[in-house]
Amino acid sequence: MSAADSSLLRPKLLGRATVNVVVAVSVLYTLLPVLWLVLASAKNRDALFSSDLLSLSDLSFLQNMKDLFAMDGGLYGRWYVNSLLYAVLGAAVGALVSVACGYAFDKYRFRHKEKLFGLVLAAVMVPQTVLALPLYLMASEAGLVNTFWAVFIPVLFNPFGVYLGRIFARGYVPDEVLEAARVDGAGELTTYARVALRMLGPGLITVFLFQLTAIWNNFFLPMVMLSDQDLYPVSLGLYQWNSSASVSPEYYPVVIMGSLLAVLPLILAFVLLQRFWRSGLTAGAVK
Image 1 (cartoon, one colour):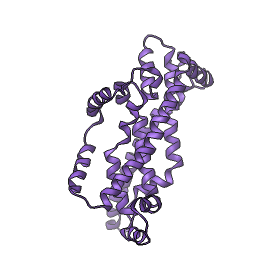
Image 2 (cartoon, rainbow, N blue to C red):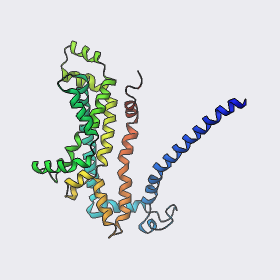
Image 3 (cartoon, one colour):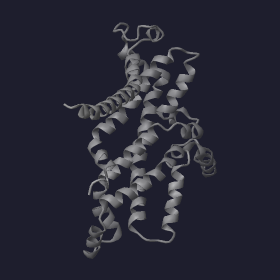
Image 4 (cartoon, rainbow, N blue to C red):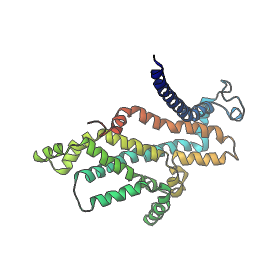
């Protein structure tokens, strides 16, 4: 190899090494907290405050699990069911609403369409915490405060999901297919339900996963809306237990175990639906 070739190869190798180092650091930054959570969930209360967290002694995984579901009369199980209802059902209905709105923005012509879509894009940039107080006042006027609906209804409408729905409709649903369905005598609802929605499957799953993650991790809205512990999601319930742990240290092991179980539904959803959302993320990238 000549000196010129080696001088050209050296920057490439250096750049590749730099990228590998950045990726490795990012992976460690992401996985180390999860590893700590797994190890800490198997330790008893005394081992949590000692320096032997990485040792295989003082394991009490099953006991921590029993204590978690027995604490405060089994409240954690109720919180888990609440989170599943808020997140899974809310994400499913919200994804259907978002994709339908995005489809309408892409395939239909109506007055002020682009202006309305501009409002949708502007709403994407509004932090959800800013909307919590107005939503509380509206729920109070409707008599929905401290009910299941006070948390469930607001999560059904996601501006970012509408934006993604329009992108997916443009990438997955050709106008020619819709015209062919209309020529065959299909109405607009039939065309959407039987033709377009099937093509939008990967996009629908992608929006569902985005909303599932956002709703499952939602904390501020339930904290504002709810005062009944039986209606709490997992995130708010664990926060309350963690606040009590400073006075009652027996809450520490159950909070850690509860946090470990709380991440499992999201991991399971991404693993089971990965082939759909991976294809959804590449919508429109390849013709």
